[in-house]
Image 1 (cartoon, rainbow, N blue to C red):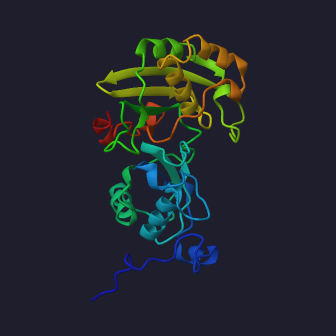
Image 2 (image 1 turned 90 degrees about the horizontal axis):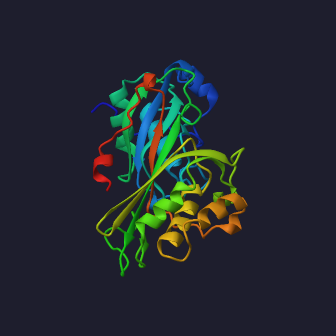
Image 3 (image 1 turned 180 degrees about the vertical axis):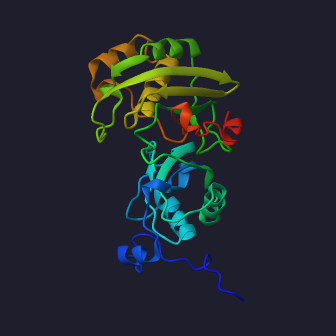
Length: 293
C-alpha cells in the first residue's frame, strides 16, 4: 500500500528532526500573506490553561501539535485571550501564518483529526496580513454559570460554579451596575497580571436565572488576569447577603486586591470569544452557544 504521510508526520515544533533549514528547503516557512484565523472550542478541565508550558499539558500545546501534524511543519499560534487552568472556551480565536496552502475546511478537519475530544477547531478563515487575534479584537465576552443548590452538583461538575446559599438577583444587579464603564480595576486584578494598564472598559454585566442556574455575562474591551472570577466573588458576597450592593463601589475605589472578596473558582467560567470589525466577517456564533445555558 502507498505510504500514508499523515499517519507518520514530521515531528512537531520543538522536537528532534525540525529545523529552519529543513523547513526552508521544503518551502514550508510561515508566510504572513497566508495568515489564517481559527475558532477553537475546548473544555479546560484537563489542561493547565491556554498558554504553552514545558509539560505540554495546555490547550496551545495540543493545538500547535495538531496543526504541525496536519501541515507537516511547525506552527506557532497567537490567541485572543489566554485562559487559566480549568476555564473553558466556546470561540477562542487564534491566528498563525500558514507554512503550506490548504483550503479552510481542510484546516478544520485535518487539525481536528489530531486533537483530543475536548478540543475542536470550529471554523477557519483567511485574514489580512495585519490581522492579530488579540490586538485586532474590539472586545471580549465571558460567561459564568453558577448552580444554587443545597448540595454540590454532579453532572455539572467542572462546568459550573456552586453556591449553597440563596442569592438575591436584584442585589447583585445593583452591585454590578457600579462596575459599568471605564475604571481602574486594580481591586479585581491578580497579583501576577501582566497587563500594561489596569484601566478597562466594562460594557455590560447581564445576570439571569433559570431555576437553580444563574448566568452572568460579561462584555468588556479586555479583561485583567482573574478579573471576572474576582468580580464573581464580590457579586456572590453581595447576593448571599454578606455585603451590601454599595460595597462593590468601595472595593473598586480602593484599587487594592485585598479589598475584594476571594477569587471564585474557574469551573463555571467560559470564554465566549472576542469580536472584531464586521468587515473581517469572522464567525461570532458557533453551535456550542446554543447548548450553553
